[in-house]
Image 1 (spheres, rainbow, N blue to C red):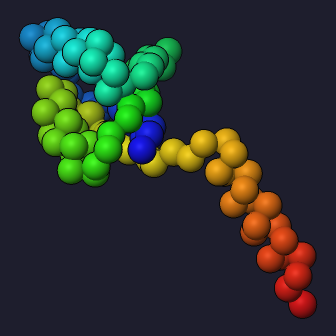
Image 2: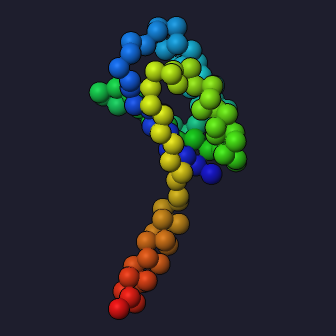
Length: 99
């Protein structure tokens, strides 16, 4: 399953060694395919899209994120566009049928 992971900066200064370790952490995941893409936000933080076959593996990866104590991590499961529109169409039909 694919997940959107958003990193939002905190207020504490970031230790330079942890910034370097975080870059290495992300490069490993980009290299082995766990992470499909990663982008930074102009005003700080960023996001990535990753694939995990179990929630446990996702949580394990999050637990090893070097900057975890300095940022807010958000994780959101993703749907394919086909599945998202299938669900939207189903809800629209249910709404249209409601009295």
